[in-house]
Amino acid sequence: MPDEKELEFLRSQIDEVDATLVELLNRRVALAARVGEIKRESGESLVYRPEREAQILSHVRQLSSGAISDESLLLLFREIISACRGAESRTRVAVLGPEGTYTQAAALKHFGHQVDIHCALSIEEVFRVVTGGDADYGTVPVENTIEGGVSNTLDALFESDLTICGEINLPIRHCLLSKAESPQAVKEVLAHVQALGQCRRWLAANLPAASQRSVASNAEAARLAARDDTLAAIAGEAVAELYDLRVLERGIQDMSENTTRFLVIGRRDVPPSGRDKTSIVLSARNRPGALFDLLQPMARHGIDLTRIESRPARRGRFEYLFFVDMAGHRADGLLATALAELRDNAALFRVLGSYPMAVD
Image 1 (cartoon, one colour):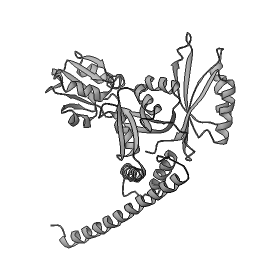
Image 2 (cartoon, helix red, strand yellow):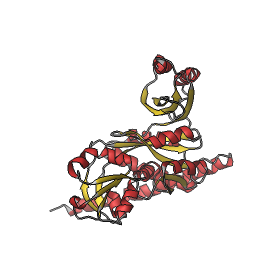
Image 3 (cartoon, one colour):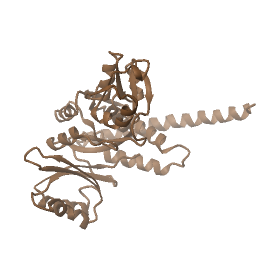
Image 4 (cartoon, one colour):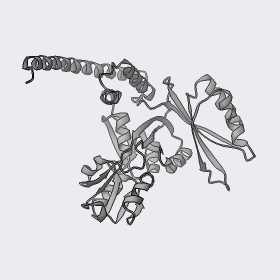
């Protein structure tokens, strides 16, 4: 039998802690609101400060004693920051829709729930909505641990004047969703092309007779599957309830450590946070060893390149653009020097943004 006196005492202690938390949360929101007033008085309209939020999250994680997991702690503080930001003004965020996409989940993980979500029909529309000012920021997928880069996003980054303001890493756990009662009744599987690729081996082994069709998003696949019980969608489990679908199988991705990296795009540059990443796009001059020579300043100045992705330049035969990520902010001394050398030697060069690394 439990010790009722001890339980009663512990519950009273929890009530006291809760009362203190409520008082402190109200105080924090009031302080954030005052910060907003001071910023507005000085003519600054920015509410979302990626570098400041990254610093706060890194700081609270360092303060933790370990009684609460890092994941839970960061989730709680992201929502606290979101509530404080919302006390100033609600941030408008464009995502790839319809409702229920992984892109929306990534945006809510990063910004918290005190935001207004705009569901766009395509990645290109996310860029257009932010460029036109109908959203303050956008969230788009850029790469996956199984399928690599998302070509639509890379092309849109090159063609747009928007800047990268942040990044989000989201674990992806795909499910097979359908109105059908069993996988064997499924005639066609719908999903975003990336999701189909991430589940390629599972589909071949378990649904070899079912055809596959790529659609704009996994949530769109779920919406279509809700109308026809011969169809199945690949999407997250949360989407099943949203579209009244059965979860026929869980965890059908080909790698258990399946993660998609998303970018936050906006119209303003981000100051250094102390733990940053810089993304650039460039092309090499058409001569042997040009790319090797081009990237030598990075090695000479000790710059850590974290990713290189190539895309056709669409302006000549076998000409390519190279998307490069590196550790550091472009305002940092060594990186600034290396980027200046790179700019002088490249046929094309543009900084896509310097932004805080994801805090996970």
